[in-house]
Length: 186
Image 1 (cartoon, rainbow, N blue to C red):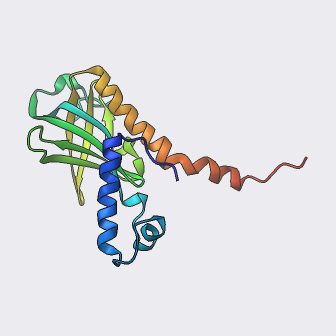
Image 2: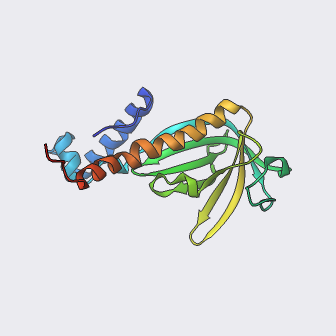
Image 3: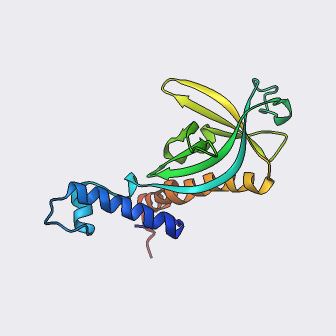
């Protein structure tokens, strides 16, 4: 299994948390090795790992798209929130979490199943620093504007979503395609 590159602190924290969860499930006579991890039903897909943290983002109330080409950040006048942005992966799914800078409370969350961020994150047509997020709650959804003050932060945000999909979701696609193709005679 290939695991995502995470900070040493996060890896220690995740392994300690997993060890605590496994030891609570396993009988006292069992150790928390790989075999007991498999027997407990816990695997890598249950672990949530942080892919990106940005300290300062802005959220905007946005009007409907002014043209068929998409949203324009220049039309966004009302900043409704400021805080942190975190992208976290869990199995093939990824979540964009907007968190309060001081308390860490969740403001909004954009869940992206199977890393298909194209359906939930849209770039604006007039800036590289702004995006439109589709926030879903059951059958209902809302669109909010997400802005970064620094162009590099926006680039990191976009690349993280793209890299997640190509690395963790699309990784099986080439193998399936090559297995389906018959071998050519020599």
